Length: 322
Image 1 (cartoon, rainbow, N blue to C red):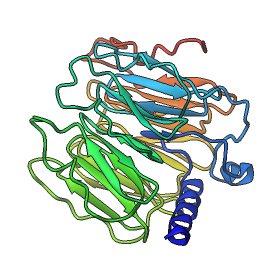
Image 2 (cartoon, rainbow, N blue to C red; image 1 turned 90 degrees about the horizontal axis):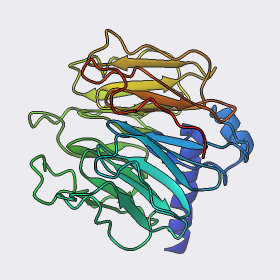
Image 3 (spheres, rainbow, N blue to C red; image 1 turned 120 degrees about the vertical axis):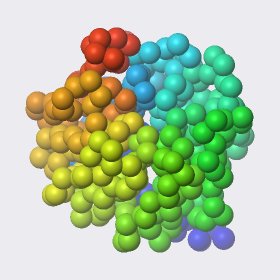
Image 4 (tube, helix red, strand yellow; image 1 turned 90 degrees about the vertical axis):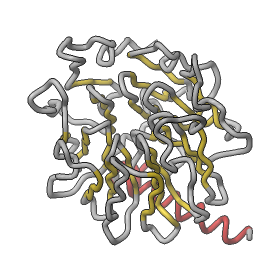
Protein backbone atom coordinates (compact mmCIF):
# COMPACT_ATOMS: atom_id res chain seq x y z
CA UNK A 1 0.00 0.00 0.00
CA UNK A 2 2.84 2.41 0.85
CA UNK A 3 4.60 1.67 -2.41
CA UNK A 4 1.39 2.17 -4.42
CA UNK A 5 0.68 5.47 -2.65
CA UNK A 6 4.22 6.71 -3.22
CA UNK A 7 4.03 5.76 -6.89
CA UNK A 8 0.70 7.56 -7.28
CA UNK A 9 2.02 10.73 -5.65
CA UNK A 10 5.18 10.68 -7.77
CA UNK A 11 3.11 10.30 -10.93
CA UNK A 12 0.82 13.12 -9.79
CA UNK A 13 3.80 15.41 -9.24
CA UNK A 14 5.14 14.56 -12.68
CA UNK A 15 1.81 15.45 -14.29
CA UNK A 16 1.62 18.74 -12.40
CA UNK A 17 5.10 19.73 -13.56
CA UNK A 18 4.25 18.89 -17.17
CA UNK A 19 0.99 20.81 -17.07
CA UNK A 20 2.22 23.88 -15.22
CA UNK A 21 0.38 25.55 -12.39
CA UNK A 22 -3.35 25.36 -12.24
CA UNK A 23 -5.25 28.57 -12.45
CA UNK A 24 -8.81 27.80 -11.61
CA UNK A 25 -7.30 25.60 -9.03
CA UNK A 26 -4.08 27.32 -8.37
CA UNK A 27 -1.16 25.28 -7.08
CA UNK A 28 1.74 27.02 -5.41
CA UNK A 29 5.21 26.59 -6.87
CA UNK A 30 8.18 25.99 -4.67
CA UNK A 31 8.80 22.28 -4.11
CA UNK A 32 9.26 21.08 -7.68
CA UNK A 33 12.31 21.34 -9.87
CA UNK A 34 13.11 24.92 -11.01
CA UNK A 35 14.26 23.61 -14.38
CA UNK A 36 11.04 21.66 -14.84
CA UNK A 37 8.94 24.72 -13.99
CA UNK A 38 10.95 26.88 -16.39
CA UNK A 39 10.31 24.31 -19.12
CA UNK A 40 6.59 24.51 -18.38
CA UNK A 41 6.63 28.28 -18.85
CA UNK A 42 6.58 29.12 -15.13
CA UNK A 43 8.82 31.51 -13.22
CA UNK A 44 10.52 29.38 -10.59
CA UNK A 45 12.00 32.29 -8.64
CA UNK A 46 11.30 31.79 -4.91
CA UNK A 47 11.05 35.56 -4.52
CA UNK A 48 8.13 35.89 -6.92
CA UNK A 49 5.50 37.90 -4.98
CA UNK A 50 2.48 36.37 -6.76
CA UNK A 51 3.22 32.68 -7.36
CA UNK A 52 -0.36 31.66 -8.15
CA UNK A 53 -3.69 33.20 -9.13
CA UNK A 54 -7.32 32.07 -9.34
CA UNK A 55 -10.55 33.80 -10.40
CA UNK A 56 -14.19 33.36 -9.41
CA UNK A 57 -17.19 35.00 -11.03
CA UNK A 58 -16.21 38.59 -10.17
CA UNK A 59 -13.24 38.23 -7.84
CA UNK A 60 -9.67 36.98 -7.96
CA UNK A 61 -7.15 35.85 -5.37
CA UNK A 62 -3.41 35.38 -5.33
CA UNK A 63 -1.28 33.14 -3.16
CA UNK A 64 1.82 35.07 -2.26
CA UNK A 65 5.31 33.69 -1.78
CA UNK A 66 4.80 34.16 1.97
CA UNK A 67 1.93 31.66 1.59
CA UNK A 68 -0.76 34.19 2.49
CA UNK A 69 -3.76 34.97 0.28
CA UNK A 70 -4.82 38.35 -1.07
CA UNK A 71 -8.06 38.96 -3.00
CA UNK A 72 -9.97 41.74 -4.77
CA UNK A 73 -13.27 42.22 -6.57
CA UNK A 74 -16.80 41.47 -5.42
CA UNK A 75 -17.06 40.60 -1.73
CA UNK A 76 -20.78 40.42 -0.95
CA UNK A 77 -20.38 36.91 0.48
CA UNK A 78 -16.92 37.53 1.90
CA UNK A 79 -15.25 35.67 -0.96
CA UNK A 80 -12.54 38.35 -1.21
CA UNK A 81 -11.83 38.38 2.53
CA UNK A 82 -9.52 35.42 3.18
CA UNK A 83 -8.69 34.32 6.71
CA UNK A 84 -5.25 34.68 8.21
CA UNK A 85 -3.01 31.67 8.00
CA UNK A 86 -0.52 29.82 5.88
CA UNK A 87 -1.77 28.20 2.68
CA UNK A 88 -0.33 26.04 -0.07
CA UNK A 89 -3.08 26.02 -2.74
CA UNK A 90 -6.33 27.84 -3.50
CA UNK A 91 -9.30 27.82 -5.86
CA UNK A 92 -12.06 30.38 -6.44
CA UNK A 93 -15.66 29.38 -7.06
CA UNK A 94 -18.54 31.61 -8.08
CA UNK A 95 -18.95 33.48 -4.79
CA UNK A 96 -16.75 31.47 -2.46
CA UNK A 97 -13.06 30.61 -2.24
CA UNK A 98 -11.32 27.55 -0.82
CA UNK A 99 -7.73 26.75 0.02
CA UNK A 100 -5.50 24.10 1.54
CA UNK A 101 -3.67 25.11 4.69
CA UNK A 102 -0.11 24.25 5.64
CA UNK A 103 -1.54 21.36 7.67
CA UNK A 104 -3.26 19.99 4.52
CA UNK A 105 -6.74 20.88 5.82
CA UNK A 106 -9.40 22.43 3.57
CA UNK A 107 -10.67 25.92 4.42
CA UNK A 108 -13.43 27.86 2.62
CA UNK A 109 -14.77 31.40 2.94
CA UNK A 110 -17.27 33.63 1.15
CA UNK A 111 -20.28 32.03 2.76
CA UNK A 112 -22.31 34.70 4.50
CA UNK A 113 -25.32 32.57 3.67
CA UNK A 114 -23.63 29.17 3.18
CA UNK A 115 -26.99 28.02 1.86
CA UNK A 116 -25.59 24.95 0.13
CA UNK A 117 -22.90 24.01 2.62
CA UNK A 118 -20.20 25.28 0.29
CA UNK A 119 -18.06 26.33 3.26
CA UNK A 120 -18.58 23.13 5.24
CA UNK A 121 -15.31 21.52 4.24
CA UNK A 122 -14.88 17.98 5.59
CA UNK A 123 -12.08 17.08 7.93
CA UNK A 124 -8.91 15.22 7.07
CA UNK A 125 -6.11 16.16 4.72
CA UNK A 126 -6.18 17.09 1.03
CA UNK A 127 -3.55 17.50 -1.68
CA UNK A 128 -5.68 19.57 -4.10
CA UNK A 129 -8.89 21.57 -3.99
CA UNK A 130 -11.21 22.69 -6.81
CA UNK A 131 -14.08 25.14 -6.32
CA UNK A 132 -17.02 25.21 -8.72
CA UNK A 133 -20.18 27.33 -8.84
CA UNK A 134 -21.58 26.40 -5.41
CA UNK A 135 -19.72 23.17 -4.77
CA UNK A 136 -16.12 22.20 -4.08
CA UNK A 137 -14.18 18.97 -4.47
CA UNK A 138 -11.03 17.93 -2.66
CA UNK A 139 -8.47 15.33 -3.65
CA UNK A 140 -6.96 13.21 -0.90
CA UNK A 141 -3.49 11.66 -0.89
CA UNK A 142 -4.90 8.20 -1.55
CA UNK A 143 -6.48 9.43 -4.80
CA UNK A 144 -10.06 9.53 -3.56
CA UNK A 145 -12.26 12.60 -4.08
CA UNK A 146 -14.76 14.15 -1.69
CA UNK A 147 -17.15 16.95 -2.72
CA UNK A 148 -19.44 19.27 -0.75
CA UNK A 149 -21.76 22.24 -1.31
CA UNK A 150 -24.79 20.52 -2.84
CA UNK A 151 -27.21 20.78 0.08
CA UNK A 152 -30.62 21.91 -1.22
CA UNK A 153 -28.91 23.12 -4.37
CA UNK A 154 -31.22 23.90 -7.31
CA UNK A 155 -28.44 22.80 -9.63
CA UNK A 156 -27.49 19.53 -7.93
CA UNK A 157 -26.96 17.19 -10.87
CA UNK A 158 -24.53 14.84 -9.18
CA UNK A 159 -21.49 17.12 -9.20
CA UNK A 160 -20.91 16.25 -5.54
CA UNK A 161 -21.00 12.49 -6.17
CA UNK A 162 -17.56 11.45 -7.45
CA UNK A 163 -17.03 7.91 -8.69
CA UNK A 164 -15.03 5.44 -6.66
CA UNK A 165 -11.93 5.84 -8.81
CA UNK A 166 -8.42 6.94 -7.99
CA UNK A 167 -7.45 10.38 -9.30
CA UNK A 168 -4.34 12.46 -9.83
CA UNK A 169 -6.02 15.82 -10.40
CA UNK A 170 -9.52 17.36 -10.29
CA UNK A 171 -11.48 20.38 -11.56
CA UNK A 172 -14.98 21.75 -10.88
CA UNK A 173 -17.46 23.68 -13.03
CA UNK A 174 -20.99 24.93 -12.42
CA UNK A 175 -22.94 21.66 -12.42
CA UNK A 176 -20.18 19.16 -13.11
CA UNK A 177 -16.83 18.00 -11.82
CA UNK A 178 -14.04 16.13 -13.56
CA UNK A 179 -10.84 14.36 -12.67
CA UNK A 180 -7.76 12.87 -14.25
CA UNK A 181 -7.49 9.24 -13.22
CA UNK A 182 -4.26 7.40 -12.50
CA UNK A 183 -4.20 6.18 -16.09
CA UNK A 184 -4.26 9.86 -17.25
CA UNK A 185 -7.74 9.62 -18.79
CA UNK A 186 -10.52 12.04 -17.80
CA UNK A 187 -13.89 11.18 -16.29
CA UNK A 188 -16.65 13.60 -15.24
CA UNK A 189 -19.73 13.52 -13.02
CA UNK A 190 -22.80 15.77 -12.89
CA UNK A 191 -24.01 17.36 -16.13
CA UNK A 192 -23.18 20.34 -18.29
CA UNK A 193 -26.40 21.98 -19.50
CA UNK A 194 -29.94 20.77 -20.09
CA UNK A 195 -28.90 17.40 -18.65
CA UNK A 196 -26.40 16.84 -21.41
CA UNK A 197 -23.48 14.48 -21.00
CA UNK A 198 -20.94 15.31 -23.73
CA UNK A 199 -18.47 12.78 -25.00
CA UNK A 200 -15.04 13.20 -23.44
CA UNK A 201 -12.19 13.06 -25.98
CA UNK A 202 -10.12 9.91 -25.89
CA UNK A 203 -6.47 9.94 -24.95
CA UNK A 204 -4.33 11.10 -22.06
CA UNK A 205 -4.33 14.45 -20.27
CA UNK A 206 -2.09 16.19 -17.76
CA UNK A 207 -4.59 18.80 -16.54
CA UNK A 208 -8.30 19.60 -16.64
CA UNK A 209 -10.01 22.95 -16.12
CA UNK A 210 -13.78 23.42 -15.85
CA UNK A 211 -15.88 26.47 -16.67
CA UNK A 212 -19.62 27.03 -16.53
CA UNK A 213 -20.72 24.28 -18.90
CA UNK A 214 -17.40 23.43 -20.53
CA UNK A 215 -14.28 21.48 -19.64
CA UNK A 216 -10.88 21.65 -21.29
CA UNK A 217 -8.00 19.24 -21.01
CA UNK A 218 -4.31 19.92 -21.58
CA UNK A 219 -2.29 17.11 -23.15
CA UNK A 220 1.39 16.38 -22.62
CA UNK A 221 2.19 17.79 -26.08
CA UNK A 222 0.56 21.10 -25.13
CA UNK A 223 -2.56 20.78 -27.26
CA UNK A 224 -5.96 21.59 -25.74
CA UNK A 225 -9.26 19.76 -26.23
CA UNK A 226 -12.55 21.18 -24.91
CA UNK A 227 -15.99 19.61 -24.59
CA UNK A 228 -19.42 20.64 -23.33
CA UNK A 229 -21.38 23.75 -24.25
CA UNK A 230 -20.15 25.57 -27.33
CA UNK A 231 -22.73 28.37 -27.34
CA UNK A 232 -19.99 30.98 -27.34
CA UNK A 233 -17.20 29.06 -29.04
CA UNK A 234 -15.82 27.69 -25.78
CA UNK A 235 -14.91 24.39 -27.40
CA UNK A 236 -13.12 25.95 -30.38
CA UNK A 237 -9.63 25.71 -28.93
CA UNK A 238 -6.96 27.18 -31.22
CA UNK A 239 -4.42 24.88 -32.80
CA UNK A 240 -0.90 24.74 -31.47
CA UNK A 241 0.62 24.16 -28.06
CA UNK A 242 0.01 25.79 -24.69
CA UNK A 243 1.94 25.63 -21.45
CA UNK A 244 -1.13 26.34 -19.33
CA UNK A 245 -4.88 26.84 -19.71
CA UNK A 246 -7.65 28.33 -17.55
CA UNK A 247 -11.44 28.18 -17.83
CA UNK A 248 -13.82 30.94 -16.79
CA UNK A 249 -17.60 30.76 -17.01
CA UNK A 250 -17.58 30.65 -20.82
CA UNK A 251 -14.17 32.13 -21.55
CA UNK A 252 -11.03 30.03 -21.95
CA UNK A 253 -7.50 31.44 -21.95
CA UNK A 254 -4.25 29.65 -22.69
CA UNK A 255 -0.60 30.60 -22.38
CA UNK A 256 1.65 29.77 -25.31
CA UNK A 257 5.19 28.59 -24.68
CA UNK A 258 6.49 32.04 -25.62
CA UNK A 259 4.37 33.58 -22.84
CA UNK A 260 1.73 35.12 -25.10
CA UNK A 261 -1.94 34.64 -24.17
CA UNK A 262 -4.78 33.57 -26.43
CA UNK A 263 -8.41 33.54 -25.27
CA UNK A 264 -11.56 32.14 -26.85
CA UNK A 265 -15.22 31.81 -25.97
CA UNK A 266 -17.70 34.39 -24.70
CA UNK A 267 -17.20 37.82 -23.21
CA UNK A 268 -20.81 38.86 -22.66
CA UNK A 269 -21.03 42.62 -23.29
CA UNK A 270 -17.73 42.80 -25.16
CA UNK A 271 -17.40 42.04 -28.85
CA UNK A 272 -14.39 39.83 -28.19
CA UNK A 273 -12.32 38.68 -25.25
CA UNK A 274 -9.12 40.27 -26.43
CA UNK A 275 -5.66 39.24 -25.36
CA UNK A 276 -3.27 41.10 -23.05
CA UNK A 277 -0.07 42.56 -24.37
CA UNK A 278 3.27 41.21 -23.18
CA UNK A 279 3.93 37.80 -21.72
CA UNK A 280 2.45 35.96 -18.76
CA UNK A 281 3.46 32.92 -16.71
CA UNK A 282 -0.01 32.06 -15.42
CA UNK A 283 -3.60 32.98 -16.29
CA UNK A 284 -7.08 32.75 -14.75
CA UNK A 285 -10.60 33.64 -15.93
CA UNK A 286 -13.93 34.51 -14.32
CA UNK A 287 -17.25 35.59 -15.80
CA UNK A 288 -16.36 39.05 -17.04
CA UNK A 289 -12.65 39.33 -16.45
CA UNK A 290 -9.36 37.51 -16.90
CA UNK A 291 -6.16 38.03 -14.93
CA UNK A 292 -2.60 36.81 -15.22
CA UNK A 293 0.82 36.89 -13.61
CA UNK A 294 3.84 38.47 -15.26
CA UNK A 295 7.34 37.06 -14.94
CA UNK A 296 8.37 39.88 -12.61
CA UNK A 297 5.51 39.15 -10.22
CA UNK A 298 2.97 41.70 -11.44
CA UNK A 299 -0.74 41.13 -11.95
CA UNK A 300 -2.65 42.29 -15.02
CA UNK A 301 -6.37 41.97 -15.74
CA UNK A 302 -8.32 42.54 -18.95
CA UNK A 303 -11.69 42.04 -20.70
CA UNK A 304 -13.54 43.62 -17.78
CA UNK A 305 -17.18 44.41 -18.40
CA UNK A 306 -20.19 43.97 -16.10
CA UNK A 307 -23.62 44.51 -17.68
CA UNK A 308 -22.09 47.17 -19.89
CA UNK A 309 -20.94 49.11 -16.81
CA UNK A 310 -17.22 48.38 -17.02
CA UNK A 311 -15.27 47.18 -13.97
CA UNK A 312 -18.39 47.39 -11.80
CA UNK A 313 -17.35 44.88 -9.15
CA UNK A 314 -13.68 45.91 -9.07
CA UNK A 315 -12.69 42.57 -10.57
CA UNK A 316 -9.94 44.31 -12.55
CA UNK A 317 -9.00 46.84 -9.87
CA UNK A 318 -5.81 45.07 -8.84
CA UNK A 319 -4.56 46.47 -5.52
CA UNK A 320 -0.97 47.13 -4.70
CA UNK A 321 0.84 44.27 -3.08
CA UNK A 322 0.05 44.48 0.65
